[in-house]
Length: 84
Image (cartoon, rainbow, N blue to C red):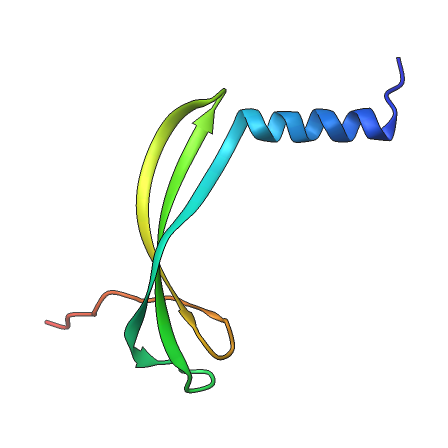
């Protein structure tokens, strides 16, 4: 049995709806510091990420993501390195 491209596409989107990751933005705030690439301001975005399998939530995590307000680059914060 051959499947048409339209049917395969609808099956793929249906599978994506059954399992995957859903993200919802909770809020955006101004963060201290500046972008190391362009010197613009930094925004902190609170995101709620939920992993779903067959409409059942498996994991719920709240994350804070940092990005530049001028160049829109995603900024990564690393923990401080303690030297002994």
